[in-house]
Length: 320
Image: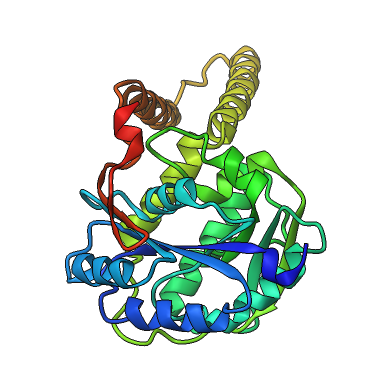
C-alpha cells in the first residue's frame, strides 16, 4: 500500500476545546498532507463555543466531518460515534488538547504497517499532573486484572486502529462503551511505539475524579465477570473458614464443657458476613442496573447534526 494511497481517519472527541481545535485541525492537515485524510470531530456536549467553531471548520474544509451530539455522553461514546463515521484504512484517535503532537502520528503509522491490528502510543515521559498519573496507573492495573491486558501494555487514548478492527468494535451497540475493552475483545495483535507527550496548551484536564470512577465501573460491569468470580471465591473461603471454626468450637466445648461461647466472635462474624452480603447485593444491583438500561434502549449517543463536504447532511441512521 503506497503512502499516497493510504487514507487516514483522525477521530477527535471535542469537549470544551474551542480554543485549540482550530489550530489542531490546521496542524494535522499540514502534517499529514502526504496522505488522503479525513478528520472526524465529535462535539460531546461542550459548554463553550466548540459547536460553532467545529461547524465553521467543517464548512471551510471538505476533508472535515463534524458530528454534534445533543448532550455530553462521555469520551468513549463520542469516540465510537466518530469511528462509526470513519472511512479510512486506519483510524487514529487523538485528544483535542495538543498533548499528543500531530507529528507523532507518523510513528503510529509506521508501526501499524508492520502488520499490527492496533498500535498504542507509549509516552517517553508523561507531561501531566500526579493525580492524572495516579489515575492512569490505577486504570492500567484494573484493566490488567479485569480484561486480561498484557502487563507491559499501557492503555493510552492516543492510538491507531486498522479498518477491519474498527468495523468490529463499532458493532457494539450498548450504552456504556469502553474502547480499550472492545479492542482487547477483538484482537491480541497489538503493538506499541514511543512518542512524545506535551503539556496542555491551555486549560485543565476534563478527566475528573467522577469520570475516572465511571470508567472503572464500565470496566467492572460491562467488560468483565471477574468481580462475580471474586465474590464466588471469597464466599467459598468464608464457608471453609466457617466450617473450620465450627469444628474448632465443638472440639473446644467437648474438651472443656465449662467454656462459654463469646459474643464478640459471634458479633464479628455477623458483621463480616452481613457486610459481605450487602456488598455482593450492591454488585449484583450494578450488573442488573446496567442490563436494565441496555434493554430499556438507553442510547449510546444521539446525533444533533452532521456537517461534511462543506455542508450539513442528514443522519442516514435516522431513516433506519
